[in-house]
Amino acid sequence: MSVEHDEVDPADPAVSPLAHFGAEVRLERERLGLSREELGKKAHCGYSLVAKIEAGQRVPTLEFAEACDAAFPHANGRFARLRPLALRYAFPPWFRRYVELEWTATAIRMFNAHLVPGIAQVDVYARAILGTERPANLDDLVTARMERQRVLTRDTPPKLWLILDEGVLRRPVGGSQVMRAQLERLRTLAESPPHVVQVIPQTVQAYPGSGCPFGLLSFREGSDVVHVDGFPKGYVLAEPDHVAQAANAYDLLRAMALPPDKSAPLIDSILKDGYS
Image (cartoon, rainbow, N blue to C red; front, side, top):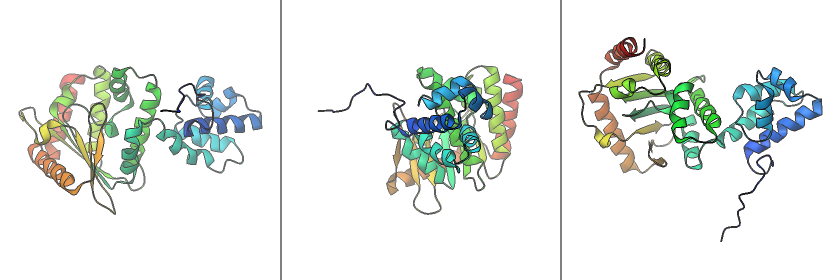
């Protein structure tokens, strides 16, 4: 028998780290006598977003957390430290462990025959993809996906290796402007060591692993793990046999794909011909 009750107050600090973050913002703002408009100006956002964050209805960005730390005299970096817990709440429960692993990885290898992986999506592409399921928390899902990408801009980023089917570059997601922004993002990654982007040409008809999107994470210490992207949810595998099978499939995919110095010109060509 379940003792859970669905009718909970999302602004109750005990409900989630997201609600706790919002309650702390409200307490500090009221202690200083700041209005929501005044805090919004300091955080470069509007009254509405401040109100939603305080109510536990929106995930704060790092910029918002840092603005709070700067605005509240005795914060001492507290809001930047709380933000990862609040951000974690925006991910589906089954995906949270993967995000934790991704942040500590030294290498991220991904293959997708259908879409640009989330780690490399621009916000408008992510919004178009995530919006297809019409979620109520679309803004939070997009924020969370963009925040994941901070791993690529830290002082010692992991090496990102992407292998994509050519059809991913040609499939119009969200319209031509969205696709242009997304292809330019891939082009930037392709030119940014240590990252690598490879494209499998459309002449290739079959893939190892039946074309199922998957990724491999490597770490400074410990064994590799595999993430399989599925519906309705993905999952992480750590068994040595599964990891070895995925690594072998990825090696075969690399061999089937165009080399990096030929993949980048193909992206340029598709940009020019399809989205200029």
